[in-house]
Length: 232
Image (cartoon, rainbow, N blue to C red; front, side):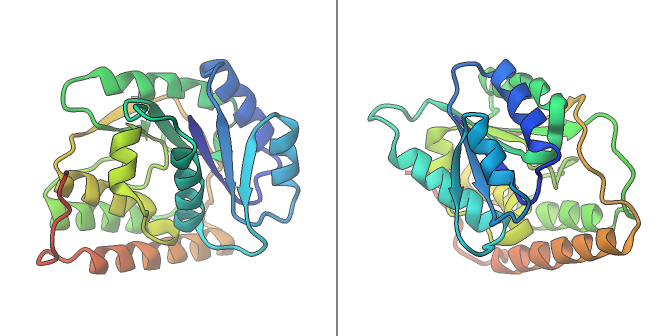
């Protein structure tokens, strides 16, 4: 099962879905569309994907949570070992590389596999990434390189334990914290991925500002003295 997070990705989602179909020819693909206004949902449907969408934006975390819960509810009994891949819609043709991420789940102590971009595209000044890394290490002791990566693989049983995801762009930071504190092993894998860089434009800085705020909220909601999640 592949869950693709999307908002206004009409110019890249078709290429992403084609690449995912090549990498995972028998997988179901669900696009978690956050009320896109540019035809993203229609393009996804035309490429054979299922679409989970609502009439107004709910943020990345809430939309991916809704898609994941719907996918898990439809899973048959005994399917807890089924792999799930979460990824972003702007990967384009490089999404074909994600087959290696799912394969990494066969490694010892790799319950959540996270893709790191081998070549980082230009963006901001690294403040948001640096804060996310700090927040993860502060809350659970894990030193993450790809703290903001939306490309993550895990089995159904692990996904169930990590839901619901944190709101908005706090999803990835909180997911890593929750996984480690629950006792799951996190591994990171460098892949030849590419995505749209936000750059040092006004729009880019506003986007990273929203990211930073959501990550800060996730950090505060997972304070050290909070009750840790526990595996059944």
